[in-house]
Amino acid sequence: MDVCNRCGEKLDEHEPHTCSKEAALSGTSDQKESAVRQEIASHRETAAAAGAMDASAPYAAPGQVPNQPLDANGSNSYGGASFGAKRESAFDMKRVVQLMKHPTEASALQPASDWLYGVIAVAASAIGFALFAFSIFSGLMSMLNPFGAYLNAGESIGLFIKLVLLYIITLAALFGALWLVSRWKGVQRSDVKTFLVRLAAMQMPYGPAYLVAFLMMLISFTSLSLAIAGIVWFTSVIMTVSETMEQAEVTRDNRFLYVASSIALYFVLLLILTKIFL
Image (cartoon, rainbow, N blue to C red):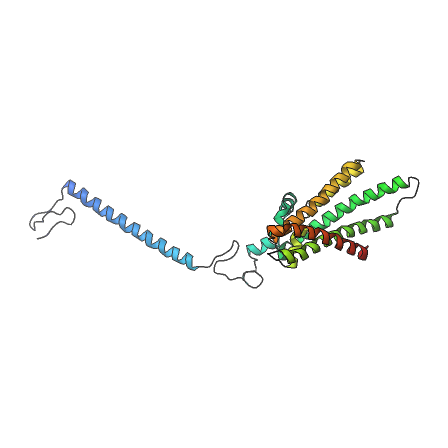
């Protein structure tokens, strides 16, 4: 017996068949529901296939073509450097300002890409110290010999260079002492280049601070200038020693011996280096 596919009623071969309204609506609704289900299943299969393709594809950095391997220089075959390489080699002035505010963040620097921050910090602090010390020397000369001749240009430049060298020798003695004591009492030992770059970058705030002391000397605020310079020097030594002790992971039982040995060796090395180079 034949049955209507839409309404389910029996069919008579000799009479035309017309579906009732309720049955037709019910059949149409069932067809629509079936079509929606098929469409949803199709979308799910497409999404699963796309996810499988993304998972199998290698990660592509911004600016790099997907599935394109990098060469030995960190560039793809199109000649463009990868985003990571650009970021590592780029100099960021905001990072300099950040190191001035928070010098302990120098512990995150990498010597291969961030050595320039250490050079800038040492150069700025050395020049600031030399300007301050030169103003002190000039003031003493004018007080001791008010009617005598002042230094000529050549002598002034020579004195300034010696003061810069003196500051660099001071830092070298401090870094050398801390390196030796850290190897002796420290648990964590870093290589020489990493150690020097990070400690050098920590000197970033002291160049501007010495410059402030120099400006105070120029406007005859001698006591304030000396106080600022003294605070800067003590802060530099204390912060460098404490940060090195933390990076070396010195145990609590060895901290007193670490600090005492570092300061004593610092002055010994400073005396020896000063006798050699000055």
